[in-house]
Image (cartoon, rainbow, N blue to C red; front, side, top):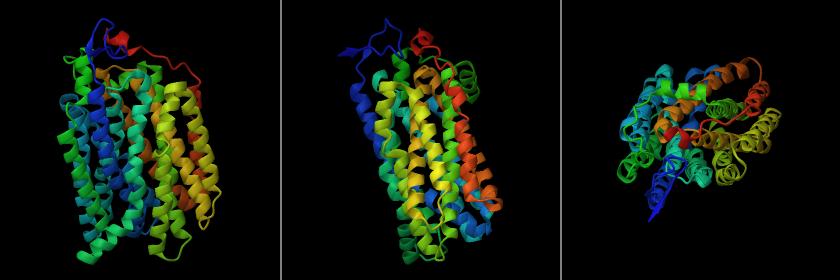
Length: 432
């Protein structure tokens, strides 16, 4: 049985049917997103509380969250090179391996009471977030063009199962670890994250075969294409309006999500007297937020396939602004309103992430994917770090409400790009 893939191969090229392989790829990525989502959820739940406890200041609190989400800024350059040579398996396993090293560093920092070392460890730990984001691109490598948004969104959705439960499991991990081994707080959370990331890397190496990216390159006749770097991804984004818009939309959406989410835990904690009770409340609210990030992704993917990326990105921006309005007007004690705001924040992020990924992937060839997609995630990581650096001081010297106002303004900056011309060179034209 044969089929043609006009989006990636020249028109006269007949290729084997890749549907069975794509099903295997989706099953494997679905499993790893659950495991990785658990690790990311636990890390998000404890990051801000850990750094505030170690530093005694909210100024540095957002830094841990931003570094966790934006750790890809450190690993994306070697990860792109590894992906170029070994395919998606190598790049994804590398990301989760870096996260395992990060958990060891953070655990050591807790024992040594060294806040600087903890921040460094969280930076590496954030590689798990990078690997989870890159998995959505692996799902799109062999997807039919008419269903690319749906396949990509399915893997984004799979993270829901782990990520929603992750924050709530942070407290359980602490109790189990303390009961078995004793020691300072948050070490149990780091141990849980490390084990989950190690298992995830092993599943990827064993089951993600044949590699979807390398297979897509064989189909398109690009197996001998020159290896590309992050710099090539930048040049592609600069030359292609669709890619450039997708990168900017993803970065601004990520900035808003991280900026508000990072300081919500501290906002809640300041309104509660019992730190242990605060951790439980934070776990529930952040679990709902992460559910908003991932649970509606399949619906968003279908809408992208049906209407295109631009309307979804516009709608996502509007939802982000609404989320900032609801969250920013919520007192620290109003956990219901904060929950609604954080769910909307996650939903807006989901629309921006799925829409931008579909927009970028549809405008490039398989040979360009690792470098261009890696560049996009690099900019997302830098945006996350900028959000963390800005959010702490804004809350410290102004208020949580002013932080939300600031993030709403940032969200609106994407509109001039969405109103421009988004068409770029067709992948089939470039491949041919």
